[in-house]
Length: 274
Image (cartoon, rainbow, N blue to C red; front, side, top):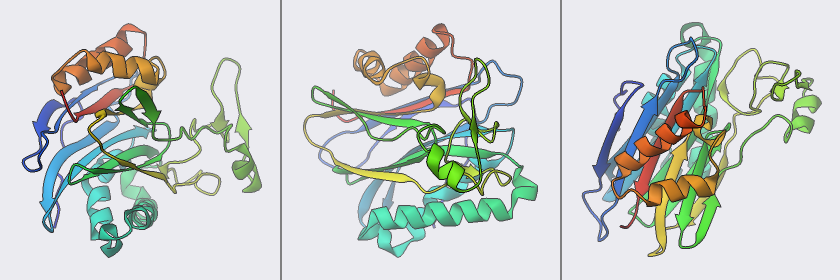
């Protein structure tokens, strides 16, 4: 069984793959924001061997409303995905099923995990050649592939999914000077947990597959604490200038702080080539 040990929420670190013809390195950095609540961001960044394959597992979980859902996701989501037998033939179906089952488990344990929820962006790197990315919420995955900067995920903003919310009996409001929120509360239209809002929000992920080529340079996973103040292109340029991915992740979080981000800030940087 795959076991992921929960790290401290203010982690920084790095690692590398142990197999494959090409060296792949990663680094991560998480910084507590300026809010009064405890740190709510968690991450996964590691390589594992399974069934003769090398899997790179990377994720950012961004919680809200002071709860234990992101820590639960860190421990269980990848394990649940890899338990799906279809993962080895249809990763997209396995990921979708595991997201649904994990959300159901979170809702059934809401008395222990809290009333809030969490966004999630997850990435599977299979044998260093194929990348599967899934997300719910507004954490984001960005890929630098040659001269192209690709946003691999969709930010699930309440305005963009207003019709789905309203068809389920909910509403989207935007207080003066504030952001659009589902039922005046949640600033994303998809999330794990959030039992009170679940009738009006979704937890099914957007899923995308990319082939890793000799032109692929960087993968960045980060919470909205970065994307609120740094564009995709700026994030890639910051990371390109720093060879060590851990130092690049620190530089990215530092830049977000310097630009006034007050949210919890977390990111994982994966470097495919120097």
